Amino acid sequence: MSKRHLVIAVSLVALLSACGVIRGDDEDKKGAVTTGVTSEPCPIPVDRNKGCIYLGTISDLTSGPFAALAVPITQAQKAFWNRVNKAGGIGGKYEVDVQAYVRDNKYNPETHNQVYQEIKNNVLGLAQTLGSPTTAAIIADLKANNVVSAPASWTSAWEFEDVIVETGANYCVESMNAVDYAVEAYKPKTVMAVHYAGDYGADAAAGAKAAAERNGLEFTAVETPSGATEQGRAITEITKNKPDLVILTTGPADAAAVIGQSAAAGFKGRFIGTAPTWNPALLKSPAAPAILALYEQSSPGKPWGADTPGHKAMREALGNVTPSDGYTSGWAWSYPLKAALEKMVASGDVSRKGLLAAVKSLNTVDYEGMLPPEAGNFAGDPNTATFRQTLINKPDTAAPTGVTIVKDFYTGPTAQSYTMDGPCFGKL
Image (cartoon, rainbow, N blue to C red; front, side, top):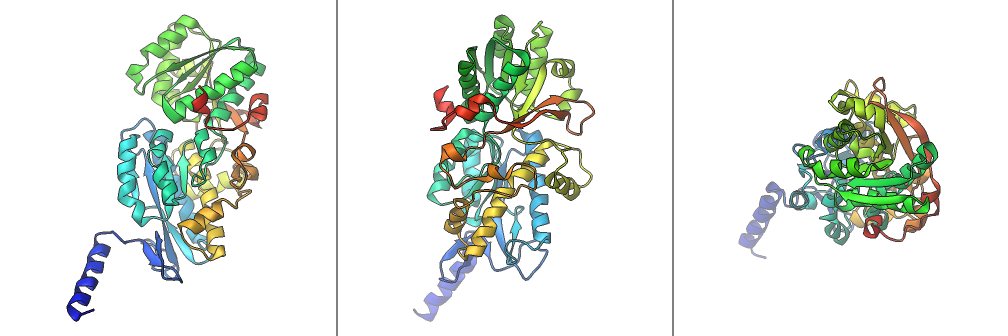
């Protein structure tokens, strides 16, 4: 190579680095590029002698229906990894950065894919990818490039994706358990699922359908769009058909509209909403009396005020914040990725393939009591590994996040006997 060509080559590398094209890459011992890992310290290091693992975050941070949950989810994950870094990092060799590559998806699949493409060459994996339909928009690319990701969602589709490290029972199981709980508590004869379209709402509706069929209950499903002013059809169907139980799978504002306006029209049945339907601000909304009277929340994990080492560590790390179970979820979702990163570094294969191999070797995860260790089984086949325990909470104005546990971790007979042989939403 001539000196002129050498200068051009060096200049090109400098330009690519400056533009962020190869930022976040480092070379492993064999000389191969390791995406999202550097021997240089993180931008905000605890220990400048450690390298940095970059993880991306794609969340609903401004205008989407889950922004009220997504902002605390993201803040909790920042606090989680800061705690990890202060405790010595990953394998004593790396710290983790989840701040350099944060993007807003506005809960839009096209936007989600666009911002993912912007950051994917700079990160080892994703600390958060919020939403079921939004993550579905990038799942093929995640698999093609071995990008391990922690989802801010619970669709049953994740049971069949090795690159996804989900935490807690899926929406399908959650709704199975909700119906089985209601059968025991209220003896309903009719069940209606009111739900968003796609991998979130339809997954929960399919679980409700499976449990209704197993219990010999009449079942109907009503799909509804996002938007509190768009719930007219759902409210009409509820008030016209008067189901004994409504399994609700929407965002919080839409849940308030459905519950409040149905009650105002004389509906006296019960609602059980999946975890993302809840926000403590609902107890200060016009729908609060109806919510207190008619609503319970199903949940894959314990709320903010629970007495576990993980919950205590979360509250201490976050300090003086307004309690939200967005924080609780974001913190809990981070444990499997931490466990996989530790196994990856211990194996010596610090790469995307090394991280994926580490994920596939996990039989249990230490959630510091926030979930049972078996919730972190990523090594078994989907039917064996699917975690099937959920909780039921009731609204409580005295509780930090507005709910207290009615029924702790349990598995109903429908979920216990169900064969997880494909994503549930395909069976609705």
